[in-house]
Amino acid sequence: MRSFLVITLAAPMASFGYAPGNVERVTAERPTRSALLGLAGAALGIARADEAGQAALRSGLSTASRTIRSGGLLRDYHTYQSVSRTKGRFRTRRDALAATEVQTSITLRDYRCDGFWQAAYAARPEGTIDLDVLRRAFLAPRYPLYAGRKACTLSWPLAPRLIEAETLQEAFAGHASGQAFPSPRQKVVIATDDASLLPALRQGDGGIRELGRTDEPESRIPWQFAASREWAFDEVAVATDREGGADVA
Image (cartoon, rainbow, N blue to C red; front, side, top):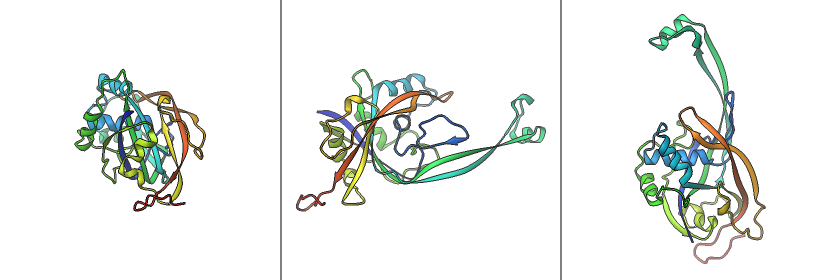
């Protein structure tokens, strides 16, 4: 048996970056490791500039997600203005805009709309993060919590719960949000950054896919992320009749 801290993650809009980019800022279909570690750090009150605290998050926690509804894709055509850095320093932005030529840039920012996920944290043996401390922090977070970007507020309570389970599937199913299926039978995706959490797949589940990401947060001061690996598989989720316990096909 292993301890998992499982939460619900739902938002009208969410964005989970997984690849570097400035002009085109894409989003994954599910919460990334950097997003889940950032969520934990915000709840615990670990500032971005706290290098020791950020390192403790990286070394102390494995993460996983379960996509119940990835949501629709929305692309935001976004413009912003900046001034040349070669013109010296200005007291205010108004002074800078008046003295220099303004440069207008374009970015394309992707969001997932009306997504619904579960997320799980597991403590690593070499780590110092206590899952129950994190559970209590999620109930009373030190900093505001977001689904990726600051513009993406949460729509459901996290409902953090510590669950003892043999597998990720059991941990996710043991949380109340694990029964929130929009249809009686559907395929959901479970993903993790820790290969030791991979289960023995059941008949009907899809094969395990190993994916490359760039979402291991090396530093949140200059905003640097390293290459990482993610393992994902499709799970055929069968809803049950809660009164009789029979499968609903």
